[in-house]
Length: 433
Image 1 (cartoon, rainbow, N blue to C red):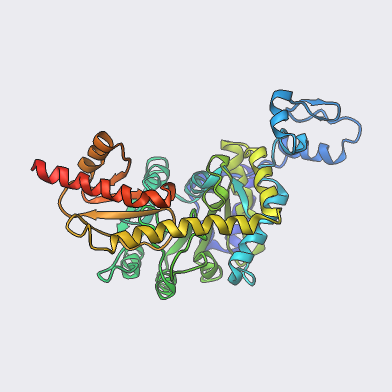
Image 2: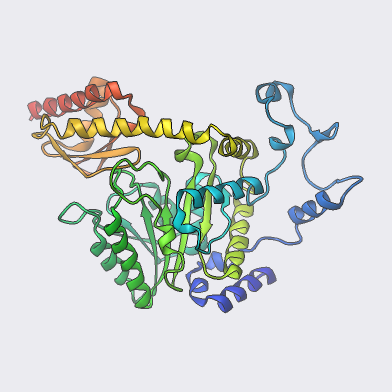
């Protein structure tokens, strides 16, 4: 084991041995080089006043070398904010701006101890970092039965973890906090669980209410008090898109400082929140009562980033930073939120009209990009392919009965036509039986 990794491990063992015990084998071995090319280049950038012949970029006339055919389309930006490598942790100004945004949008974070957000190559990369640091063969990753399929690749296929499912909804079609509690407590013998909390949920578009949120936090605290170390991951990809009565803040804030055996990890980003999917700008943020623990986890995270992508793309970080600092940002974001809310409300209005009751019910939704139908009479995959082939309508089949529909990408005036076509598809298949 490298001495830097050993030193980080010693810090975690001293400050919070439960967090050290959460680390995977890779998580224990990883570190960020202090004497490598990046650290030497950073020192040279600060002190190399005459010549800096360290890092692998090209300079010309005192600025990063670039092609005019590229710069001409980006003339509003200084070349130094586009072409140079971004630091492995991301642009410092962007990290500070995102932290400020977190506190503004989630006021209960103001008095909590949490780290500086680290820039990731969007949310999938952030979740992959979590998997590398904390998941290993046989570790339990606890998910609702309705979940984003990429969790399986990220935690199970890549890292060998065991996926443990519980029903998302209870008998009252509320969040199944009792099922979550039982799934975590079942890991008592292992002594460790990775819990993924994804709200608004993909694929259902459901966010728990305030009381449900309290029950979730209570379930994690009970499991921690029972001796289970919990990596509590809030996948907040669709944060802020809350259209009805529900939680308005990430559970990350409630989990910070909850118990020494609970490590909150927030994975979020501009991808969905600011409608910049192709920019690939995300963040990973840790909550811990000890600054030393936060610093050690940051160093290990930077080690994973350095060993995989080295650093995230600089231009998109610059674009997001400029947007966050723009005076028009909040008004423009509110405008897009209202469009999304109207689409969600139109979907619910149609589904509650009774016109389609013989074909499907739907799972409760109140937020995000998606909703899910529960088909009564036909197979979801058969309907999906039929809708594509006959009507040119794309949907996502999940299991035998569930059909996910992304209302986010359908104009409000087209939503009724969409559901009429889905209904026609159901009737077509019924007639074939």
